Image (cartoon, rainbow over all chains, first blue to last red):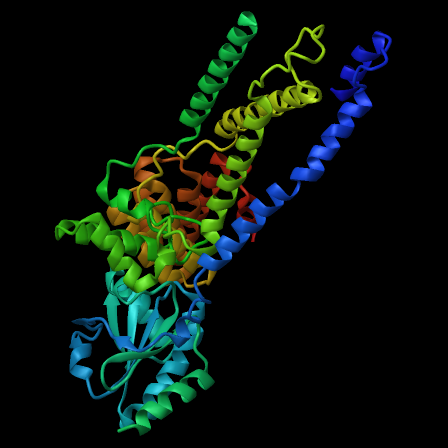
Length: 205
Length: 298
């Protein structure tokens, strides 16, 4: 477009004293030199503003959230007994959300059975919250993994799990003797995780 | 001068009309009529990547929709329900989380840049007082250096509007919004679960899920999958029974004949060859054909 202008102009012989194209462009350059800092300043201002308005670093991961009161958890277990987490006040409760359609849950169950066996005399209660599952399917899973004696609370429509803020399966919550969630593990728990978190709570009677 | 002004006005009107059209094309479809869906579209599924609770078929999202339905039935307002979810899942659960920090920058920077560019354009394009004492022979009122700069502004603005309208028009064709995403269907979820269970070779559990799906939707395709799962789970009698139900509706169903024949090999071996031969004649090109021929031959 600049070239077109130049071509147009060059058709008429340039008279002395008329402002030449080069001079015009020179003026443009000069003007740009005068104003270049304006967009730069605008950009800098915007970035600075954004930085100033951004909140301090968000408080860490779910693991570090402050203890909160555990939501209600009541219902009839797979074995037909009544369960209410409020009745377990005074005990440490490990709530594991699982389902028969979830592969990692299957791998995790024996660990929970072992934790139940080992620490229940010291006041640990392990509860499986069975998310959106069929009765037969979960019975089969429990039999296969030797978890037949585990307290399992079916959550047919998944609303109990949502109440607990579950994002996926497996997910595990540790509730202390005062009924507060003190640890939370999205995903599979390990032997180490259990030992590190459950044992101190058991000792604190 | 008058003609030119008219041209400019006309161009501006056309551009305005185009931008309005582009805007109209690019706005999202209105909120769904189903109140549960309406709340669910405003929530982000925590188990998925970039999907709303309304669109996702993950078990967590299905459960969340159930919670929304329950709470709406209890008379809670959508705002209360959103707050309930934020208490449990944090701000990230909202499809449009409150603007803070860096997200705010996304809006502030373009706005500030636009304002700055607009001010600069206005400064160049604003008609200036014609310097009477200079070059009275010049036909145009443009000050030196102003003309090409003004033209550049006009071209740039025209180009920008053209670009935006092109994107607005093209975007409508590139990604059409999914018209009325199918509501979460418990039968579909159950079938999917059953399919996953089969992948883990847990056929008895899969059959149970298929049965659950059939309760919601009596469908021959699901019945056939149930029959296959039963067969693999070792329950040949039930597999045959299920296959028979399908064959009652569709006497020549190849898969029905196949499962029935394979089940009969375990329950009534004398009837199996006839059924399997019928399968071969009905579906000569079936992937299981060679294997069945081998079974019949042996």
